[in-house]
Amino acid sequence: MESSKSIEVSVVIVSYNVRYFVLEGIGSIYTYLNKSFEVILVDNCSGDGTIEAVKEQFPEVTIISNIENVGFSSANNQAFEICKGNSILMLNPDASFVDESINLLVDELITQKDKYVILGPKIVNPDLTFQHSCWRFPSPFHHLLELVFLNTLIKTNSYNTQHWKKITQVDFLSGACIAFSKETLNRLTGLDKDLFWMDDVDFCKRNREIGGENYFYPGSTIRHYIGQSSKKNQRVVISNQIISKLKYYKKHNQKINFILSVPIFIIHIITRIPVFLVLGVIKSFYLKKAAAYTFTFKRMFDYLFLNEQSVIK
Image (cartoon, rainbow, N blue to C red; front, side, top):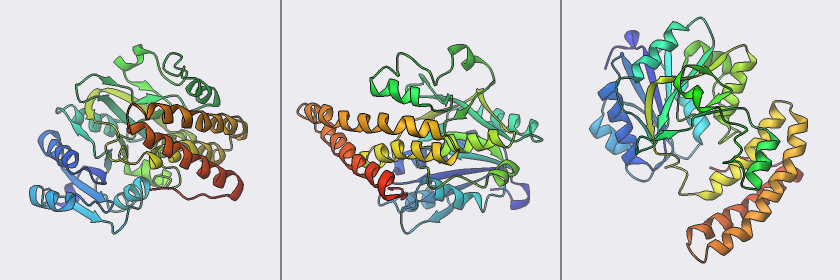
């Protein structure tokens, strides 16, 4: 570990009951990142021994141990407050570096130090196949396509494959791994704790609003297992995904998008419940999804008519 004055990169990880993946991710940092760096782990009250394992295997890691699950955004903001590096890498707990190309991402960020820039690397699945990691900002039309199961055929929010081969300016990047300068972070004042599952979209949106730029950078690659912390609780995932999109539209004064999206989401929720109940006969996992959508319907009602703004964690 370098002295605090010489740290170039702060790597921030938020964990919740994903010990195996956290250890893999931290190990990859020490293996491949050849800058002077610090690792800051914020643990949201895991019950799987994550903190003890990290302390044993990587005693240099700075650990913030929360006594409750404060959520992904708030936990990242805790780490941001103590980052010593001028370059910050926000890394999901189920993501890891695969080679030394991650250093190129940091180098690119440094070369653009006079701009407000957010960079995202190429992301691959565990089998090293390509994983989409940047999109156009959301719209009601995309929600409508998702409602009728056409979003995989008509990709209105995606970019053409030609964009994956070069540095490309995009609307927003996957929060699985993004890099930005401390100056950019200070201008954006961290992640919005009320937009769980839309915090990365909002972060990039706000960067654009201050004249910044968001770039997909294919010269660096990370591996991402997708949703290891969240897949255990479908209620958290589904309810926050849907309601945070409405919050996002309201926050950015997109009234038309908000009004158009409300009935689309209500129909989406109502139609998914019987579908997953039927599928639950085949596999019990779908019964959990049906229960999650039922829970989401209540949360939607509370949000729209009772002004309930809380985030489920």
